[in-house]
Length: 133
Image 1 (cartoon, rainbow, N blue to C red):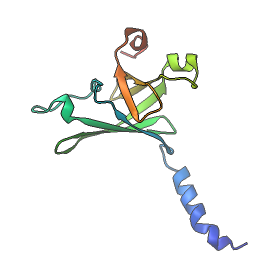
Image 2 (cartoon, one colour; image 1 turned 180 degrees about the vertical axis):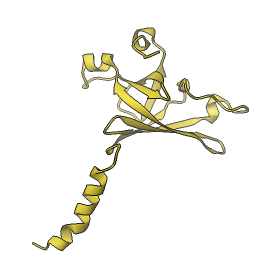
Image 3 (cartoon, rainbow, N blue to C red; image 1 turned 30 degrees about the vertical axis):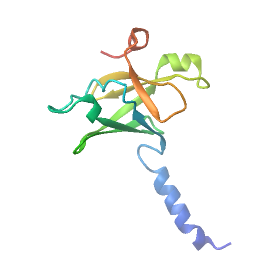
């Protein structure tokens, strides 16, 4: 076997494995009908329809959030993602899934309604009662 041919694939594998956040598990967008995260304030002159949010969920529980407006990136944040107790109780085979994302100490409950690239913030009192205040 020519070990030198395996050198670059192995180097790449080690580099990916050594990423502090792990690998990206999912890329989702905040649905247009969803309210915005509690930690984000819409800049003056913009409306909700002007804001686009994308999220990259990583293996080790981090979520990278990018908020864009008409003129470009408005905010980039790293949050912590954890499963909501309701999802853990129902299991992971049926939608909706609920997750709690915390950014700068402020938490929101997110709902993935179906196997689609969208996620929504929910204000259902039964789900939000577990949030850290």
